[in-house]
Amino acid sequence: MKVVKVKRRSQVLKNPAFGCLKDIPSVNVTRGCLHRCAYCYARVFPETPKNEVQLYENLPEKLEKEIVSRLKRGRKPKAVAFSTASDAFQPNEAILQISFECMKILLKSGVAVSFLTKGRIPEKFFSLFNEHKGLVKPRFGLVSLSSDYRLIFEPRTAPLYLRLRLIEKAAKLGLEPAVRIDPVIPGLTDREEMVESLMRRLAMAGVKEVSVSYLVLRPKVMEQMEKELPYAFWQKIFSVYQGEPWCQVITSATTKLVRKEIREKGYALFKEIGRAFGLTVKICGCKNPDLPFEFCAPWEIKEKMPKQKELFK
Ligand code: SF4
Image 1 (cartoon, rainbow, N blue to C red):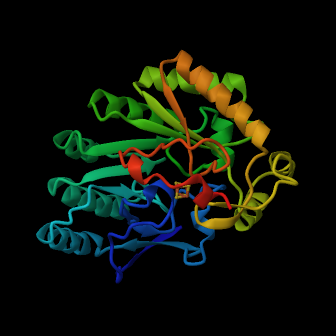
Image 2: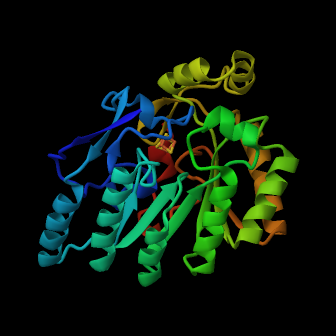
């Protein structure tokens, strides 16, 4: 897929109006994402280009101006999150350079940076993070150590063992990396032996906290997965959503969740195995509005936690 440079016209630092990201501005350096995960909901947004990834080449310039203006008004954001609908570490030099410049501007201004990635983080980022320890909240997306899983669901992301090495490196630098196990694929990546091998490796890599959520389905994501996964495989996954009602999850009123008893059993297993390896396991509250709320974002804004009733209508 080609990467096309475009100019960002609108404001960069906007607070997403959903879930636990509500009070944290987020930055997406691209529209679209080279990783193209089969389950990705951002791929089916109407504004996401289908055959290219658009890179906002003027993002650092705009971001710098906005930060200076906010500092003058005493409105420095506490943290900025990369990225809600893309990945800051996609395999493309120009994208990585824009991500680097944006993170540098924020960190030098004393603004904490959080990111969630399934990509390869180049060395120069670690040098930058090392200079700003305490302001960097890295999170890595890692669902399974099975190469079959990666091949089917996220073949363009960084290899799983490379991601483990990046996690290890972040832990050695004292960055306290957390891992997001999302989306758990029912009947596949929630099998006891798979959960155990993942948790063991994460603990060995120096992880202390993980957040977990099962795959949530929206109509367009269902179409995408049906098209991209082997048919029988998709049918098996979909069987645990069949008959479940559409519900409000984050911004979408048409979301299907895995049957509640399957999620409860699966989450209990993740918690039990995680505990055995000394890991704190949190269940993503935003994506499980019918379960007791757990706050799994890396910043402390607990007084502003979304109410369960607001999420589950
Ligand atoms: S890395 Fe994230 S944003 Fe990119 S395709 Fe995968 S799920 Fe979507």
